[in-house]
Length: 295
Image (cartoon, rainbow, N blue to C red; front, side, top):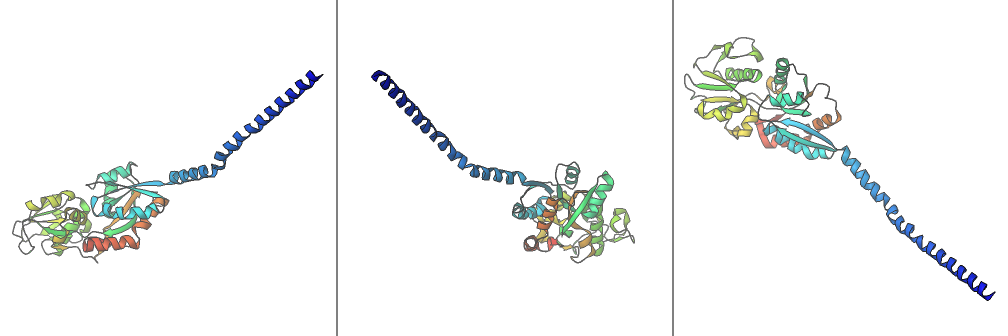
């Protein structure tokens, strides 16, 4: 009997040990509950990742100056709206519209509406003006000849070769009394429309981006404001389009998009930022009369 009691006591003791071990094992779930308690921190990280995932990248093509420079000032304004602005620079007037039409960028900022309209007509594209931002007066810049008064007979005058800017250049030369155009030719003016040329000026049509580089080879050139800024010659201008002229509205530089994208929220945020007081002040203080805000 004593033996049986001892055996039962041993079994009971063993049972108590196993029970204690089981209780000790319950510490592991309690310990693993600590990471579970940190789940909200994990959720916060997930929420942060979700916010980052919702950040929108907006790619805008632009001429290096002043357009890309202005867009750089817009970046922090858009970042506050959850939009990451990427700027893709172009040095000509053709590729920015081609890549926009192809869907490789979301918008571009380098041209005025008459140029865009002409591009659409010639290329069968459907690009639209989403907003008007600034005006760049065409200016006459000195080359071999330092002043308009010194312009010699037979002097070489370079003008942009794209239709709308060439017409503007010829109208500017007419305003300065250097030539006379046929009545009513307006923005369709070409060299063939010159009816008076008292100095027998040799007017050469050159790709707009090349004009600043060619100044040493010509007497004067009519240069787009953005290329004058980029080339660092803006302060040498001899004369320019009137700031209050009809051209200031007609030839304001635009944000262009694919037709139908004008109302995209991120495009609207881009326009809102570009037309802010911050950007107006930047344009006015940085470029003076060479680049003029129109909003």
